[in-house]
Amino acid sequence: MKRNIVIAVVTAAALVGGGTATALAVAGDDDDSTSVTRTDDDRDDRGEDRSDDRDGDDDDGAVRAAAPGDVTAAEAITAALKHTPGTAVSAELDDGSWEVDVLAEGDTWHTVRIAPDSGKVLGAQKDDEDDAAEVRAALKGASVTAEDAAKAAAAAAKGTVVSVDLDDDGGDKGWEAETRASGGDARDWNVDLKTASVTPDRDDD
Image (cartoon, rainbow, N blue to C red; front, side, top):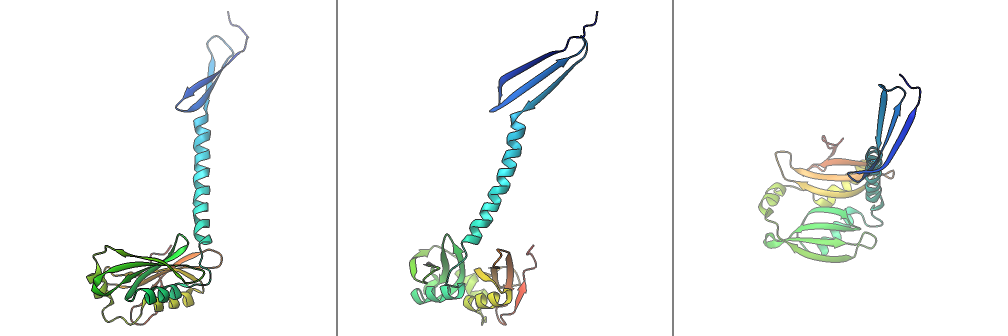
């Protein structure tokens, strides 16, 4: 004989892999039953996805907040070379200070840290790099320095240069610069070693 009794059973406190599972069973007839299972893991996954998105936004915001004050990339390079004579190969605004890599005499590398608000030297250290020969070969016959490249990129982009670096790989050797506009938009540029002409990086999205 069929019964028209609806029985609802709620089972809680089942811990599955760190999440709570709640099962709801509904029976209308003896032979018909429906079971629905909802886990907190699903909600946690969606929460983690949203958290990851927010984390990415925070990273972008951190980069924008690290924009230099009164000292430009070119000025930081000048200050670094005054402290450690040689050839500046890169400059990057990192962790609240400019880091300028200088190839000095004797093929020794130095990293000089410059305060972005005052231009003062915060410190310098010798680095164990072994690509001095490649760098000197790439710069042979070049008339555009890292300082020149930084100035050219800033003028072309109408923005702030946050890094300049020598690309000595492949046949298209030159300076690479990254700029940020006042709104925080980043762009990459290539600066010719001989003419200082500035072109957008082909790989820049």
